Image (cartoon, rainbow over all chains, first blue to last red; front, top):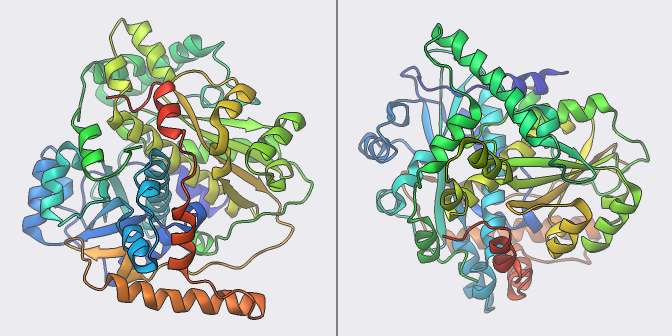
Length: 247
Length: 247
């Protein structure tokens, strides 16, 4: 164990922030940390948008499902998959890069690149005593988000990262057991159900304790309820409209 | 600046490792760190496969384009997008989760989840004095990789993470300028080309210095050459065969 791993293991999502903006120095350090992450073949297929304009933050909070911490935080970052600059590069260099950047492979590369960068940003922020919360809710309506942020083709806003000084520190939610997530030398499905049932007991106890017995959900119950509903069904079409994932 | 941010900023990919396996304790700490990452709506849509079997590592190294560090390292992790457990959950709970888990939205969720976890693993490993290298090369032939690792439907191996004691520490490659990656309140394309030209000069100098003048590539030149070739064109079909990204 060391300070770095302590910071990582101590993560919890923060959903209430003090009214205190990040300094320029903090923002630059967080972005530099994001950029230090590995990138597939040096492609750097992402961009980060910092949103400080109060009216834009307000609109984004509404679109994300009225989450107040999208509006009220120290800084709001949006991580985007980005192959727009690679289109520009193709034009600069006189090479046809279009079939490549419109492929499912490069869609995956851009998502992975953006996510590795974001997690570095998250850890860097937490190491500075700040709290973070990822905001997948911005994917509720990416066309509207795109208008607010002037998003061009070949760019997809993937998620927000709300950062700020925590108002209230919450509990850590227990993760799936090690043996369920980690396989050795091959994928093993043998004990899948029994592991999930054991995990359900951990989760029920966790909710019972936190709510004085009011909540008794299991993890599999939660997941089944969530996944029974289809959400963001426009995504395949949107992603293709942005000229990703086409071939 | 602090130890965590120093670790993050000090990252470089390591491609030569000592012949010294990671301990079980190190592996567990790295996986626990991965699991501590944020996960979209608690979905935990990834798995990690540790490969220690020498014959499997040898085959994976060949498939990844004969990269010796896939075979020779302290431990080889493979991070997978995983919605297989959510299929099992649907069956356990008697709910139809299939349309949801086959959507492009959930494909993105699984990729993002797996990548956030992987970057925590990478930083944790580096904090322990280990070096890391992401291996996108396993995507060269995912059907064969799938056979070696008994990958079921609804699981996609995304990339490897080779970890071990570094033999040789390499240089850090300069990233795109802050102003090019980071936009404020909206995406800005105004200075795109001039920023890329300035960055090209940084990259040319970097290569010149490292190679005594032999290499003088620019970044846009490298990218255009790489992207002119289509690679892994089977990916869209493969991803759908694995029952992701279908609707």
